[in-house]
Image (cartoon, rainbow, N blue to C red; front, side, top):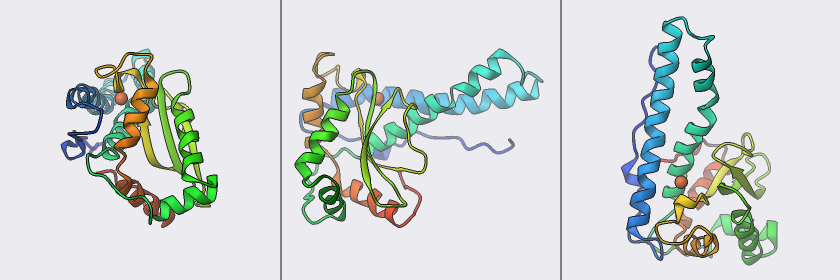
Length: 208
Ligand SMILES: [Fe+2]
């Protein structure tokens, strides 16, 4: 690898003034996201260096190889997460995404219940509303850690972090439900609609 891309923290995605999610909480969480960006760059650098040194058969190299899914998804999911939060209120009523949600679940409320239940799955991870770009179908998926349970080719439309670090400045570890309620009040549906339309048109998701 000669010209490996160096990732940068996407400051433009940082939300402020959310309802019931404090700026202090977001700032604390943001530092973890910065850590993933730096780890991704370091991973790529380390692998090149170990290869140059003829150590591609070392345990260190194998360890770095295994970390790709964790670090890359840690970076990308946080960008999608912060990018689908906003202090502006959006009307979901006329959106194509809402129409598809209703077609799939009968009502927005039924989908929301399913999404909340997905977010309450025991363990650390993410609740993701995915679109199948081949069929337009929308499904809620729990992804454990950052990397276990993704569906290849499916496009993330709405991403909710349910690791404790996403809410422990504002809530206790056992109060995930309160955080999920707060999260839902701040969803950037305009951004989710954009992602859904891109998915339907077979376009690559533009996350920043
Ligand atoms: Fe997080």
